[in-house]
Image (tube, rainbow, N blue to C red; front, top):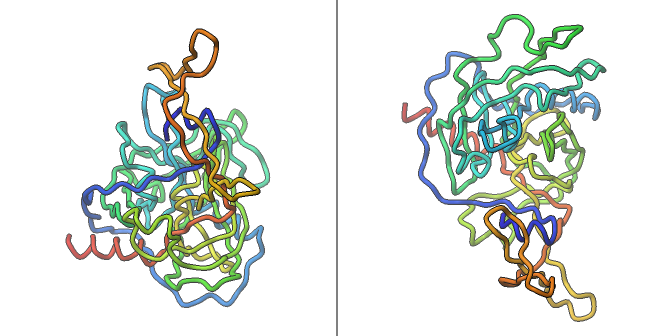
Length: 315
């Protein structure tokens, strides 16, 4: 996102860039996701949040340019032991090593307690991708499911959190289905789970020319930067898709319904806004303003499983 636009307003954008496939998934000796028959038990919101915690991960980039040497880039979900699914735009353009973290920012809620400490991170690489569908699959160098001993240590206790491979449901959910969006938005201090419901399906016209392929599930929940790639579960705790981003709505003038534009100030290499001798902003152009529509786009799990199957067939 252009930094000047960030100065004007907080606008959530999600890019979809066409690049080649990044490889293939090697054979996995551990458990792999399978589509199970529809679950009949409807879980409580609290139960759904606990399931979301076991299948969600934080994704970050190791870089000296970020405070602490780590830059939060998004969320992901365990698709198999050692295999994480996320969005392509989360990992596209990452220069430093990618790490999968079981905690975030030194804070995690576990068993009703807030623990502070250093969490175990796992190096990961992109082994398959489909930029047009905005999906990617990562493999950790080590399998955290096979790790022994405590993974999270504090001055007073040591905890090994429960990890689970997501149960998937490839059926497109009907409107009104309860959903839980899970991930590490904004600061990424702790896992955040939000409830919503399926508002419909389709590919919004605004994205039809972006090269994004396949149907999207529309969910009535507000997502934020960092949620991208996180799991969306149904009322049975099954993975139905990955959070892709918000569907942005244009800001219109109340009387004429004409688009509202904001100006782009000129900035220097350090990101400082430049002004003229009179103290006015130096303007480089104008841009139409958008706002969060309250509708999020979810990539159906069937698109994700298709990539995994194609990669396995090429091994």
